[in-house]
Amino acid sequence: MKAKDFINSMMKPLKFYSKEGSKEADLQKIAAQEQKQFSYETLSKATDKFHPSHKLGEGGFGPVFKGKLVDGREIAVKMLSQNSRQGQKEFINEAKLLARVQHRNVVNLFGYCTHGDDKLLVYEYVSNESVDKLLFKPDRRQMLDWKKRYEIISGVAKGLLYLHEDSHSCIIHRDIKASNILLDDKWVPKIADFGMARLFPEDQTHVNTRVAGTNGYMAPEYVMHGHLSVKADVFSFGVLMLELISGQRNSSYNLTLDAENLLEWAYKQFKKGKCVDVLDQSIATTSVDEQVALCVQIGLLCTQSDPTLRPTMRRVVVLLSKKPTNLEEPTRPGFPGSRYRKPRHPGASSSNTASSTAKTDSTTSTMTVTATTNPRSLGSDLRGKRPLE
Image (tube, rainbow, N blue to C red; front, side):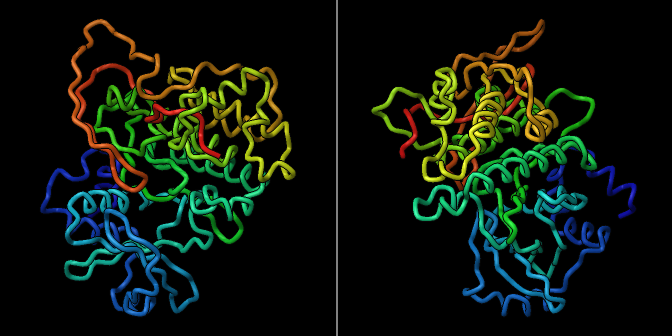
């Protein structure tokens, strides 16, 4: 594949899987173009022949193994399961999207391997696991003091800014959540798992696509109307911010207390002037009250019901980097069933058809949607009360 043809193919959003027969060749073409090809023997040796003791986990695509190359680099090898049809799509999609991505806060893809029916992606190994394995564990959450949590928030914001505005083409991740943020040995956050990510055309305000994401992180207008734009990731990022501040999952809540979900509860504390009360009390002695209040307000701005009111990631990065003045007050947060309704435009179709399968934290929610109005972002699928302590 010529360089020009490769770049052109990268710029065509939502066209990655149009030819079933081309999937097998895709990975080889990408590897040849990017000069990131590994031999199967090299990866087998690095992982002790993919020994079960080296297994880090398993997703819908297949298993992931830890390994070490002869040059000393630690790696994570993602192996495509031959039985996973959905995994094949996500696997090739991830390879294509990450082929040209280079940023401190995005997981680094070292290369690719094809060996018969086996297809593998080779990543840098990130030693401190994912955020959710620390943040939501009562016996481990104190490892993430306020300084670390603030740096995670800032790092993820910078990574998303890169994907939205500074990479080769605008990339919408579509599944920003605590389990997809990895932490390295210096606690630097790395955005991972690009299986559901999409390229976004520069000349369009949105695209219509099947809804895919994780309950608790998807915005109402995306879930309800199937419209996708960069504001999808902004909403998910806002949810992640509030989870990092509070130490609570947005999808976990107490039915006995007067709040729809974590977002609604945080909003009520903000309106009472009690932003510091949102903070995880297990790290209260390490916090900086002004930073906590700022992050609560930014998180609520990112999760507003009306997606047009949500800030861009560039503005979020700026707000986090200095002490802002005259920061606007957020409106109510959004979640499926909340008050936001898509705007009607002349000639817009009012028909929407949808069939959905809900997603847990590790499986994909899918919804076929026909819609012609403006999209914005991702939100949360919650109907409960205040998060559990």
